[in-house]
Length: 347
Image (tube, rainbow, N blue to C red; front, side, top):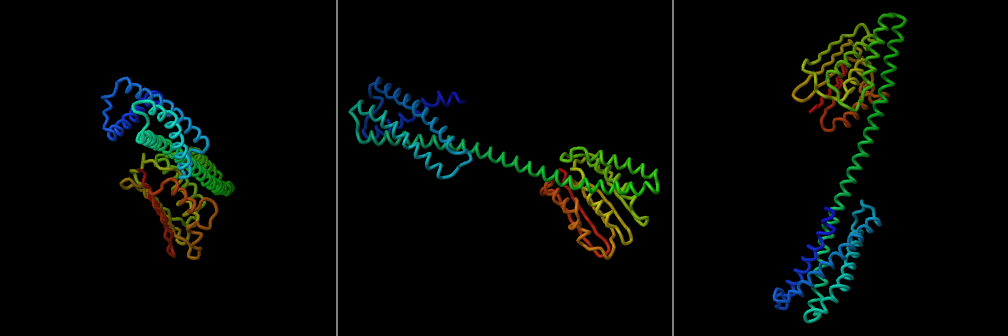
């Protein structure tokens, strides 16, 4: 394609310029160019083609020089005006240095309409060519700029996701180790089982958390966490869990259900009722966690807005990054209970 624009296009461009000028001149003078001596016509065509080769070579060099002068992302009207000025000057120099003297020495000499046509027709074609070439150049530069911007934005989002995940890990480690610490004095066998559960949970977290996993793995992780959390809970705890049997290979991002369950275990009180439900409906996964709360607990603490660590606000931000427009997350509080509901569209 580059060879065509360099060697094949100039003759076509030259013929267009020549034929257009001839049609205009014949219309004004009444001459018929095919009645002219074929040798003169051939000389006219060859001269115009050679003119096109020279002009298009300088035209390409001019564009490369202008590209070095201004950045590719500069699409300002100021740049366009300056480039058009350079193009017009280039046209006028070439036309008056080559075509005007040539026309003055052929046929009946140089006439006023010769000057008008020779200075107008090539300029119009060069402006059209400039528009096509520059539109393609600026479009490529715009696409490249958009791709670079999206890459930078994606890198920033990945960095933010890693930061949010890093906030969660210390909180999880502290709670798990604290549980095992108290078990060591009371029940060594139970402490060993907790260590096994803890190691399995930790192993799961070492995988790439920016890639999706089958929801069955996430449910397995959640069950292990619930078993570990139960060891620290009050004997009054009334736990009910429901995991839909149809939850299997659906792909989800990991560690999104856990904050709801962790928040419920932390703030459960009152009659110590806690219910966890994960179900699938159509192409949505629906998670709901209900827990009773002490009547005197501040609402800001229940919703997680004042908590350090991941909290529910952290979860909201992860959902915005991972499921933009494909999730709903709501919380509701009554004097006796707190409910968190999450819906994910996995397809």
